[in-house]
Image (cartoon, rainbow over all chains, first blue to last red; front, side, top):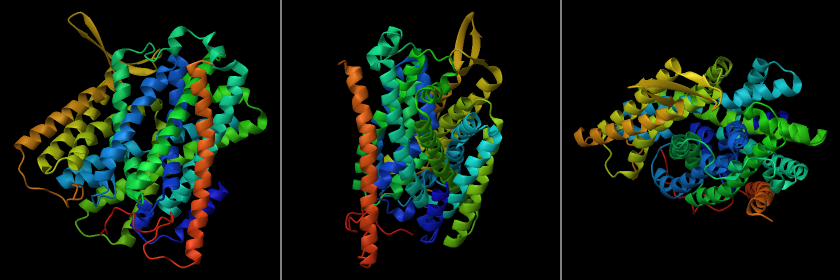
Amino acid sequence: MVGILVMGWAVSRRLGGFRDFFVAGGRMSTPVLVCTLVSTYYGLDVLFGGSEVAYLDGVVSWFFYARPYYVMILVAALVVAPRLRRTDALSLPDVAAVYGRGTQVAVAIASFFYSLPLLALMGFGIILDVLFGIPFAGGVVLGAAVSLAYTLMGGLLADALTDTVQFTLMCVTLGVAAVLVLGQQGGVEGMRAVLPGSYFEPLGTYPLPVLLVFGLGSLSVLVEPAFYQRMIAARSGKAILGALAVGLVLWASFDWIVTVLGMAARARGLEVRPSYALLVLVMDVLPVGLTGLFVAGVVATAMSTIDSYLLIAGGNLSYDLYRPLAGRPLGDAELLRLTRWAIVAACVVSVACALWFESIVSAWVFMATLLVGTALVPVLGALLLRRPRPAAGLWGSLAGLVTAAAGYGLVTALGVDDPEWGTRIWRLEVGGTTIDIWQEYVVLAALPASAALYVAGHVAGGTRRGGKGGGAPT
Amino acid sequence: MSTLELATRAAIVFLVGGSASVFCWFLADVVREARRRRQGPERGAGPDGEGGGDSDRGPRG
C-alpha cells in the first residue's frame, strides 16, 4: 500500500492538466493497457461471481456467464474502438453529447451509478473482516481511503501503473492456487467422479431466459465506461488491438480457472455461501505463505477496480454533468480541481451505498441494467450512424433510464428474495398462471424500450444536431 | 488426458506465463522510456518508445 501511494505521488508530479489526469494524456502503451484493462475489468464480481455460478451449476459459468464477453470484446476492438478514436470524446457520456446536453446528462447519470465501486468495496470489507477481524465498515473505509489517496494524486496513469503490479500478483497467485487445489482433488477427472453430470454440460440447469440475460449482459462491454476511458487513453489503435488480443487470452484463462475452482469447492464438499466458495477453498488448501500472497492478489483485484471506477465516477460528475450545465467554459486547472473533489464525493457515495446495500448482486444488476438500457443504443448510434438526430438520442436514453429504474423499483418493491437462485423475483398471477419476473429480466424491457424510442425519435426528430458534436466520427 | 483437463492446464500456463510476460514487457517499456528521457525528448515520441508516428489521433482542444 505504501508503494502504491508513493507511485501516485511520483506520477502526480508529472501531470500537466485534466487530460493527463483523466486519460493519461492519450499515451498509454500496449503492456500498460493490457494490465489496466485486465485487472480493472476483472474485479471481485468475476472472482466471486464466476466461482459462485460454477459452484452452483458447473461449466455453464464459463460458457454462458463469461464466453459472450469475449465476442463483445472483439466487436468493441474491431468496430467501436476505431470509431471512438476518430471523435474528440474523453468519456462515454462525451460520445452521447452529439445529441445534446439532455442525452449527455442521462448517459452520465447511468455511467455514474454503474461506476460506483460498491462490490469491490464490500469485498474489501469482507476480506479484512474474515482475515484480520477488522469490522466490515472499517475495511470498507480503509479500502476506499487508500484507493482514493493514490487515484487523487496520479489519475489514470498512477491507476494504470499500480494496476500492472496488482494484475501480475492476481494472475500468478490464482494460477498457483489452481495447481495446488487440482493436485489435491485429483485434477478435473477427480471432480468428475464426485460432481453430478450436469456440472460438465455447457448449458447447465439454468432456465433459458436467465442464460439469455447472461448473454445480454455482455453487451455492457460496448458501453463500459472503463473500457472507453482506456480506448481513448491508448497511444494508438494498434495498441488497443494488441492489448485486447493479449487480454482475451488472459481473461479466458482467468475465467476458466475461476470456474474450475468453484467446481472444486463443491467437489470438496464445502458447505458455504456460494459467493464465498472460492475464497474458503483457497484458504483451506494453500499453505500459510501462499495464502498471504493469494489474499494480496485478491486485495489487489479489489483495489484496481475501486481506483479505476472512482476516477470514472468523479469524471462523470465534474466533466460530464457539471461542465455542460455550468453555463461557462471551465479552465483546465479548475476542471482538474473539480474532478478531484468529485472523486472524493463519489467515494463517499460509494462507501455509504456499500454500507447500506444488503444485497450487492441486486445493486449490481440495477447498475448494469441502468447503463445498458440508457447508453447502449444512443452511444452505438452516435458512433455508427452518419447523421444521428438529437431527438433519437434523448428519447432513447430517457426511455432506457426510466424503464430500468421503474422496472427495478417494481421488482424490488413487489418481489421476494429467492434463496435457491440468489436473486429477487416478482411473482405475477395472470389468469391463474404464475409468471416469475426476475430482477435480471428488467434489461429485457429497458433495452427494447430504448431501441424503440430511439428509432421513433430518429424518424420523428429534426435533422439539427445538438451539443458540441463530440461523439460523431469525423 | 481429457479435453477439460487439457484446457485447465493450458489456462494455468497462459495465465501465469502470460501475466509474467506482460509484466516483463512493461518493465522493458519503462526502461526504454527512461533511456529516451535521458537522451532528451524525441519529437512526438510516446512513452512506449514506438515513436510518435503511429498515433491515429489528431490534436485535441
